[in-house]
Length: 95
Image 1 (cartoon, rainbow, N blue to C red):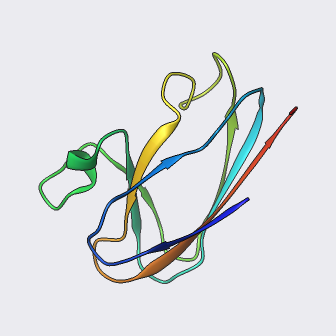
Image 2 (cartoon, one colour):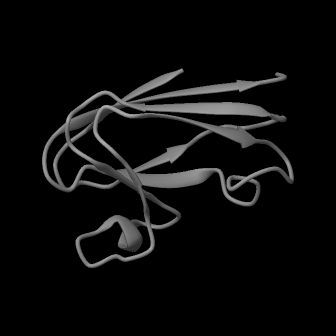
């Protein structure tokens, strides 16, 4: 489990460490949105290819080798573009 403090506008690269099939739980504990992307440019203010984790929302995804959106790339960039925020990450796999 990870608890990641995000400063406003600063991209953080996180290796999610997924080694087997399972689930990933993401919880944006703050009130500000968080952007997620495969590279730092896409989470910047100029970027356009990102997924938004809405403030106060929880998400669950299937993950693992060949499964889901994280199959090819486990390192993701996270940024809180409009204020400081906290993201909780729990990888529940078979390891």
